[in-house]
Amino acid sequence: MLAATAFFDLAAFAHRELFRDTRHAWEALTRLKSYMAGCRYPELSADLFEEGVPLTRTLVWFNKELLDSRGLDIDYGDATKGRLLVRRHGQLLEGASVIMAGAVLLGRQIDLGHGVLVEAGALIKSPTIIGDYTEIRQGAYLRGHCLAGRGCVIGHVTEVKHTIFLNEAKAGHFAYLGDSILGNQVNLGAGTKLANLRFTGGTVPVKTPAGPIDTGLSKLGAILGDQVQTGCNSVTNPGCLLGKKSLVMPNSTVPSGYHANNTLIR
Image (tube, rainbow, N blue to C red; front, side, top):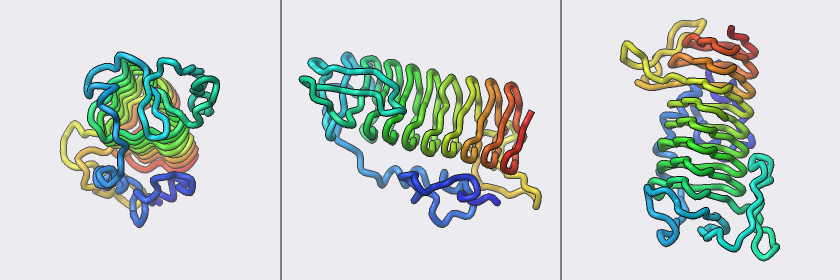
């Protein structure tokens, strides 16, 4: 009931190793730091950007090399649909990613996949791994230990910390995600908050029909199964597990604990 496979289809997720041999879905979060520490990250040229300082020019990441965008033609189409296109002398640079002027990279453990767009004003702390065709929108704040799969959106003024996005998960508009996992095709309405810390302190329990389970974690946000949707200004309490295709109506507060597939929360 609480295994990762009950919440997520992991077949197409590049980082499914995180979930291997886990008993409970949240255990992937306990492995996230060591997993990301063991990943290989590209060498980012210090000639084109200064760590922690907003970029003064737009850069292109292509074939494991940072390029100055001057002299390149960039078509800012929908990155999640593979429509971010970069050309040099009319020739398409297949899979090129774009980091717009004004973005800030903090630390060297940052990896961008193919066709990624990082908009102006985004701040990305390492370690962070961004999968192919993902869009990091203006003002997004990635606080480190953020891992996003393919075709994701981390939106305007969205804050993300120690969180996993499976493929096509989207948090498009001023959300907060702490110590959470978003399944495939999850969509968060504007203003969704995934709370991760109990007011009363202590570790976060998960309430189940068979009784509470102590996760042993001082911080645990939400585990949202594949195709879960939340309405605008909704809030999940710490230790919230929503089964696949569940719906959270706007302005709702989701109680802590396990909620079965297809649950409707008002």
